[in-house]
Image (cartoon, rainbow, N blue to C red; front, side, top):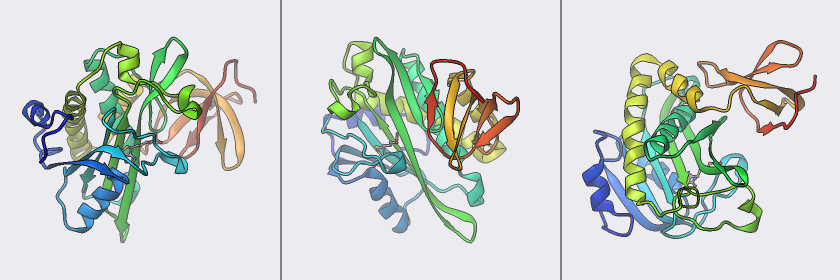
Length: 270
Ligand code: BTN
């Protein structure tokens, strides 16, 4: 373990989680921490193995987007998970990580809002902006999960973003008006995620999804592309599989398993 400006010693001193993050690697630079964890998984790494990068040269987000990953400003990390579960039960994990992110940011004094499936937003003087995102990737075999890679990017201290992201992104430092220690933010997240994840393994996703819903933007008019069709409605919650439930203007409740939610300024149309 290399002690660096992440505050690695402080991070490990502060970490209360028993399993997740105890096996910790810091890489000053890598392509993507998700790729690093895939390599650790293939080499037989244990659940909870954590890779944190100072910067990513090929950080990636959902739907093939790049994840802005400049050096030493933010948190880019991935955790190896090995739940002994059928592959079809994996999808709530992204939402459980979102629930843990929201409660950890709330514990740090922020007022996060969750946007399905993987965005953490903060209110700014310019409106809602994205402060963190989650990318979960899975390998399965014969219908069972071989491993999950839980990748998280948190804009901690970035003061500016590329023009293309400028209208969408913010950081904890911008919103809170001061720099935060990345190691503290990381430990706070892992301490929040471990009990939610353990409860998921023991009892299923209900409790974690209830936490997700507590921080989610529900009751909001939105539009989503579903199987090539635009659906407008109001966000209502999530089901046990992690699908988003939208009350459509026609009155029925639609479950959405994939897609991009776009907020509507006015009431939804049929
Ligand atoms: C998204 O909002 O689309 C997901 C962003 C996930 C970014 C993190 S940063 C650490 C990990 N490594 C990656 O390449 N991506 C995830």
